[in-house]
Length: 424
Ligand code: AMP
Image (cartoon, rainbow, N blue to C red; front, top):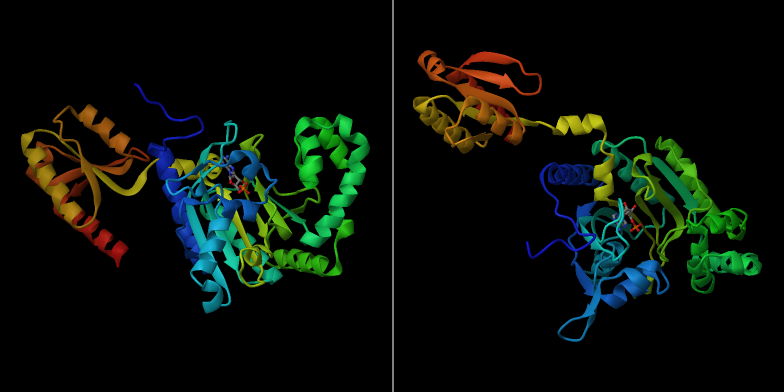
């Protein structure tokens, strides 16, 4: 084979593809419930959009973007995340003028040229939601509730929601000064990355995984002492309303996010199944981003989850359910007459929208049953000469292995009726 996949890029096939589809369906259902509308934004944008939104000194902008000059000499980049594009689209399509609040959700591939490892890819998929045009702490809570219900609907449990208050840009400026003063005498002990962060983005020092840096970070000043009454009040209201909504969370005063645009509430959902890269999803408020793109001074809040990581956390229970496609049928035939009858039934059922397949190879019962297994159909209709003589068929439930003899016409009519009810 002359070609292989690029490092950090994946083909998504079989059960993984089905799991992706199920996760996306859960997102559509739950986001719809919360009044978020789908938005499809381009994969390619001007590079400056991301630099402005995420911050010049962030890891994503500094080292992870797939960027190049296109034929018209514009510097472009494959999107590393969705929020910047959504905000651009919100302004470019004048949503800020037409409506007070705009709620969007998106799903699709993102690109970051990171070092590939378990749970970290160069092309990965995110599902995200953004509420633009709101300052209310209840919007933060609504967004978090939407995330939590989506996880539940996607068959994920055992996660933890962590919460922190990052304050405003002005409050963080004071905090940065305090951090610099604290870390300065320890510069020699910091890792190379952190020495760089000390100069350019000192808050990210708190996020370093290196043990020595972590030890120092544990004793570093906390942002809490730099917050004003206004942002404390906002955060307290978020915490109160989360309790009202019945959402469990843990306060994590050391949690800082990798992107600069966040203000006030930030949150992260982690899962023990994920190992070192344990973040399933993350988000927060970004009150200055719309304005920094030339729009009105309006608040916004959103989140994004990683679909590959979600798929890794689907519970065994949910995975077992995936094993069989419920309303799917497979026709197995014995002999030429049964084959022809089977094909007629196949065509008729498909005309009525029933999901049904059949093996045309004319091989043995055993071989056809293997095909049925592979198709993951929950039910197999077995037709042989005896059954045809008596106007019956044997129906095998592949989940528990039980078999029943049914009257053929009545059974087929019930499948058609069932399908009709489903589509009504
Ligand atoms: P972020 O946009 O960095 O806040 O990431 C949000 C979520 O996207 C993370 O919690 C992960 O689930 C997922 N994610 C981010 N980067 C990657 C990556 N390189 N590979 C796989 N998933 C990722």
